[in-house]
Image 1 (cartoon, rainbow, N blue to C red):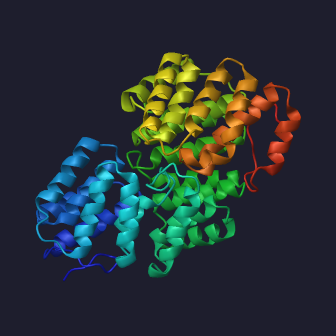
Image 2 (image 1 turned 120 degrees about the vertical axis):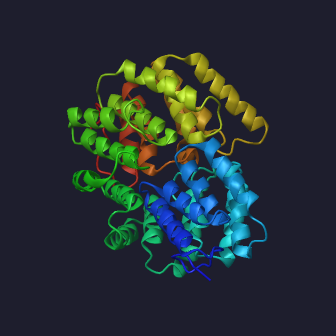
Image 3 (image 1 turned 90 degrees about the horizontal axis):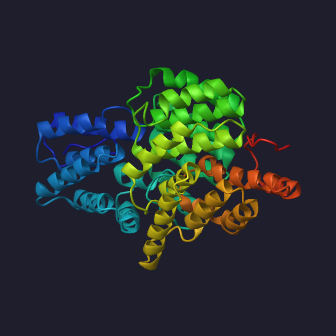
Length: 432
């Protein structure tokens, strides 16, 4: 029997198909260009190779090409037949993933991994801040993800992929020294791992080493194709480093050339949220608003995400609606969230509606309204998804509202209890 890189048997008799499948898996796990093509080579060599069809579906999903992803998972089901236990469970899990049944998929993954802990393509979607757990909306989801990775760490040894994802979970829960050791080992083993480069940037951010992060990313990105999955988001990290350093022109150049969806490719969720976050953080830092950039983002947001349902997107779209003055759009999104809550389908609870109201109040210069909306949900903002670095947008908004309201003492007290590590708070008028 042929096996994958993790020692798991695969139901194909074709070494060509197996090798192409292994290549596709590593391209997904490393965030590099071309996993879909690798899985297609595996399918061309063996059209009945179910795992290759599943891998292709996952690659398309990561690119935001959902109709094609659903076609690929349908093709997997069409040729499934009588599969071994591991592959049948693997396919059933991805049926849940592609159907958007996140909670059921996490439960299925945890059960599957008890028997097949080295199935990285099942564990993978449960990791990272944008994964099934990261976007679950559950309070405590950062600790939940770390617990899952801790549970299976012994099965992966010094594997480069596992180490980088474990490092991210550690970093997001404040275990910065363990995170740094893990990511350094991961990148030494596989330096061209884009997910690893991303996680290393987060380790730098949480340790307050923005200059080191910028130097590292400038060098690493020179050989990373613009069409690859993480190019947009890694560019966002670079733009934030330049912003914090006061290099305004460089920050805007990176944004315009590599982040804004009109100028570059990225998964729609990243292109939207990274662009909104950059523009807002630039304004909080004291830069002038770019109305044309905001309007283009507004149009992109409503085209790609017309209805409520993804907390991280809804947060950024509500901000975009508030800035562009589309209060009707903002109210419609709030109504959509209320409808989901009534159906028991708003796992992030009151957090996103509160933030939407805060952004609306900010645009009306109602600083008391901003503070009153954010403060009650401040300890729960992990529920919107995203990393601590990304959710600093919420903290910076609150700090700016304190300053604009003349509540400098509250701003100082908030800074005093802010997590240790990140060095800069680029909010105009703040002394720290």
